[in-house]
Length: 426
Figure (spheres, rainbow, N blue to C red):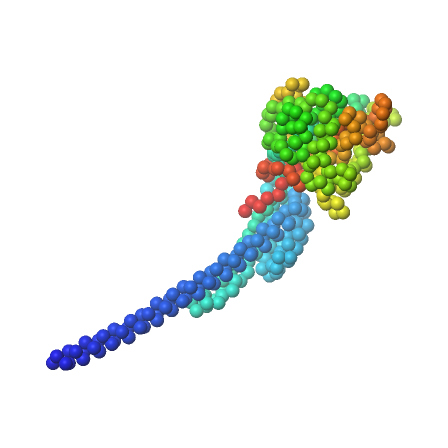
C-alpha cells in the first residue's frame, strides 16, 4: 500500500512538472511577443517622427509664399519639399496632394497652410499577434502674417497723417510739397491700404537731418553716442516696440555721423554692412527736390528708380543674398517727442531697407536730386535746393521680413509695412 502511494505521488509530481513546462513556454512566448511588438512600436515611432519632420519642413517651405491671394506657389513649394525629403505623392492626403490653405483673417489672402502625410509602416514581429497593417500620420500647420511688435533700429518714421488708419474708413490726404495738389508723385490721396498713415512706398526716407536733437534718431539703447553705435551694431537692444503702445523715448543729440558709420559697419553679417565690401549692397538714390513748381512738381524724395533697385537687391536677392540683411525693423510713430524726450505712440513696425549712409564725413552733408545720387558734395557749402538725404537713407517695403528681426508673434495688423513672420502653429 505504501509503495502504491509513493508511485502515485511520483506520477502526480511528474505531471505537475509537465504543466510547469507548458506554462513556461506560454510565458516565454508572451514575453517574446511583447518585446517583438516593442521593437515594431519603436520603428513606428521613428517612422512617425520622420513623417512629422517631412510635414513641418513642407509647411514652412509653403508658407514662405504666403500671404497671397493664390495658393498655387505655396502648394508647389510644399510638395517640392516633400519630394526632397522622400515623401511620395501617394503618402499625402487632404486636398491638393497633401495641402490645405486658409484665409484666417478674412482679408482675401491665404495665410495658413496645413500639410499632412500618411503612410504604411513596417510590420515585422507584430504579425505574429495578428497585426497586419499599421498607418502612421503627421500634420503640420504654418501661418504667415504681420507682426505687431519688434525690437527696432534707433530710428523713426514719423507718420505725416497718423489718423489715416483702417478704422478711420477714409482716404489719406498728404500733400508733401504743400502746393495744394494731392496727385503729385509721392503724395497721398488714396485709401488706407494704399498709403497707410500717409506714408508712400515710392519715396526716399531719411534719418537724422540737421545738427539739432529733434531730427529722427531715438535714444532707445542709452544716452551716449557709444550706446547708439552699439544699438546699430546689434550689441544692445532697443527694447520692444508694440503697436498701440506709448513709449517714452529721448532723442539722440549731436551729429553722430561717425557713430552711425561705425555702428553699421560693425553689424552682422559683415558682407552686407562692412565697407568697402558691403558696398555691394548699396543702392544709389535719386530723390526729387520737390520744389512744388512746374519744374519739380513731385513730392520731396519721390524716387521710384531707387526703390526699384532696392527691391531687387534687398527682397529675395539671388546674386548677393547677404543684401537681404539691409532690411531692418523701424517703428512708425505719431510724432517726434520734443527735445528732452517724451511719450510717443507706436503706430506700427515697418520694414526699412538701408540704401546707404554717411560714411565719409562727420557732418550731415549728403544731398541728392533726381539726376544726382545722394552724395557728399565735398568742401564748401552744400548746394541749395537739393534733397537732404540725412545720415541714413532708404525705403519702406510692403510685406517683407528683415532676416535678423527680433519679432514676437503674428498679429492681426493690416499694416502693409509690417514685417511678415512665419511660424509653425500646430
